[in-house]
Amino acid sequence: MDPRRPHVALLPSAGMGHLTPFSRLAASLSEHCHVTMLSILPTVSAAESRHYTDLFSSYPNIHPLHFQLPPFDSSAYPDADPFFLRWTCIRDSASDIFNHLLTTSRFPISALVIDSIAGAILPLTKSSGMPCYVLFTSSAAMLSFFKYFPTYRDSNPVSTGDVEIPGLRTVPVASLPRPLHDPSHLFTQSLVQNARSMVESDGIIVNTFESFEPDSLAWLRGRQSQSQSQSQSQPDFPPVIAVGPLKPVKISISTVPTVLTWLDQQPEKSVVYISFGSRTGMPKEQIRELGLGLEASGCRFVWVIKTSVVDTEDQTELGELLGEGFLQRVKNRGLVTNKWVEQEEVLRHKAVGGFVSHCGWNSVTEAAMHGVRVLAWPRLGDQRINADVVARSGLGVWPEDWSWEGEEGIVSATEISRKLKEMMADESLLEMAQKVGEAARSAAMLGKGLAETKQIIYIPAKAKQ
Ligand code: UDP
Ligand code: UDP
Image (cartoon, rainbow, N blue to C red; front, top):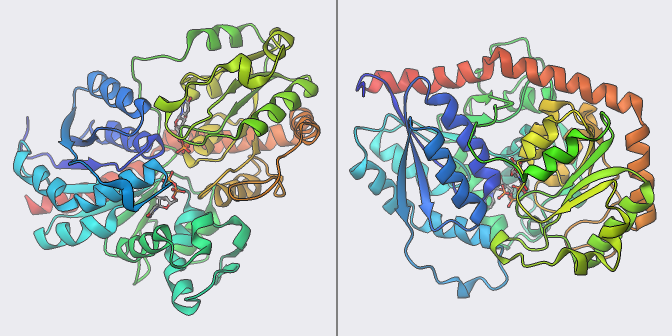
């Protein structure tokens, strides 16, 4: 252990959508400095728990630091999303977590990387003089919205409409995370508080790349073109670094082996992969309609089904869920699972030619990395803002009238089948997606964003030693 090397600690809050980019960043940083990764226990999902175990055993350079949360009384938040509850609980325990980090660490921490708990952590790092960075786990488009929304809220305290971000774009009210429609909602209040606090951080790292989101990145940096120095910041905003696309971690678990073996036997670019991420359960009626749409489309497919928000509660029996005879009818061209699959491996496979995605940001960046066409079907939260990036960049298409959280109506099998066939037959979309893929891989290979991240983190860290 070389005490002259910086020691960076990372603190992801809750959910695979946060843990995934944190692991990727931790793995990259661990090549050059000491890395401590906090794991807050118990995790909400079994997927997170497995991921931590695999990460720590595959990357011995990443030092685990566990923190056991005290019991949390959730009765004040009836029907709240379990991941949001966990976020609230971590925020409430922020000073204990920070003290734990300071007192049990092997040697002094030179910088801390956090996510959406900026409001609770930044006052602590500020008062102890520790540099602190935010790894923003969504798109630069979402970060632009984050940056502007507190200002919007100040001038629109009682209602929410379309949000016109001056000099960038208008985010229609229909694309906003649903809770934000209500100014007094706890989610809205904490998001605004968090967005205001993020300004106090020493830098914001986003898992995106320059050519994927040029307008949002330029706007965040307060200028119109990309020609100026990358880490230049606006006077009132920290430097924004496009670090992505972050490369996947190489952990020893693998996907359900049958998925890859099955893909090996399919023609190139013939298979549609369907997944709505790690925490978006779909209503049963919509699942059935999606199944019928897949069947009617005649496409080959791999379909990962989730019916619950937390994986440990998913007790679905697939045959029953999908209706009599479905699995039998599609068995020669479709594979359905409710298990965890290593999505990266699936998207990288040459047989995969399209991805029906909820547009969680990790899924979007993974599709971009492999140049896989996306049929965007956002379901909640930041996903419509991300779907807009997918459509604007040419990576995919987004049928904006498809329903999402809180809206009546399901998308019919006929409509789904039509869009699927359209996407899989669209050669020019394939070409555009492949171009995005080339740009993504070249950004990852050049590693400019990562080099800049290391520079911004290591230099102040070293100066402190
Ligand atoms: N993921 C996976 N297998 C699954 C479900 C999800 O590997 O069966 C991964 C996916 O590749 C991505 C992450 O989990 O890296 C999910 O993050 P994303 O931002 O796409 O969506 P979220 O789950 O946060 O809604
Ligand atoms: N978020 C936040 N404050 C909150 C809840 C969420 O800043 O009280 C952030 C969250 O980290 C994410 C965005 O708001 O960047 C959208 O939240 P959502 O729950 O949709 O997505 P998540 O990233 O949690 O999967």
